[in-house]
Image 1: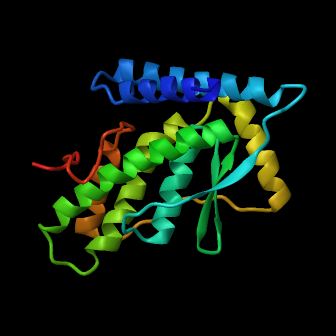
Image 2 (image 1 turned 30 degrees about the horizontal axis):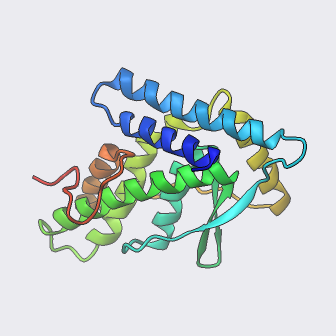
Amino acid sequence: MTQEDKVVEKIKKLLELSSSPNEHEAQLAMDRAQDMLARYSINLSDHETKPEQIVEESYEWSGRIPQNNLHYIVSIVARIFSCEALKRMTAIKIVGMPTNIKVAHHAIDCILNQLRLDYEQEKSHYRSIAFFHSFWSGAVAGIQEKFTKQESKGTGLVVYDKVQAYLKTLHCGISKSLSNESDGYNAGITAGKQAEIRAGVNPQVQGNLLR
């Protein structure tokens, strides 16, 4: 196992703890995860012989979701880990340092898998054609409300500033959010607010809204 793998595994464990029902413990774990990732990335970027560079990596998810909503969710979660998301044609790219992207990719997968389960459960309660789009729009709003306060801060801003400098060379705009129809939108907001960054979520595991 490489040094990077060891750091990423430690961060994943801290992210699991950030799902604690104890708000203080959850915030402490998230702060530690962000700080550990930022310090590791800064050390690599300052390495004299082989500095870590800002890169772009594609993000793909196998679930069914409107592309714009996927882009917004990736953007919101990526910023927690000092990354940004770009939309290039139909492809979504995560921009950042390689280790940060790896952690962001893991976190986004965890959240989207939970949301997919919640969507499958909630859609059975409604017959609206608009439910699909409104749910995912609501999920964006819920995730934004929950995770925006976790965006890079402190040491992480050093890394994030480097990402922003890279984006300026590309003249790229950054995503905000969107909204939609009531039933699905409200269900999506609830699912987004309850989303946690924890592994082990798959189609056989219950989502946060399953009753």
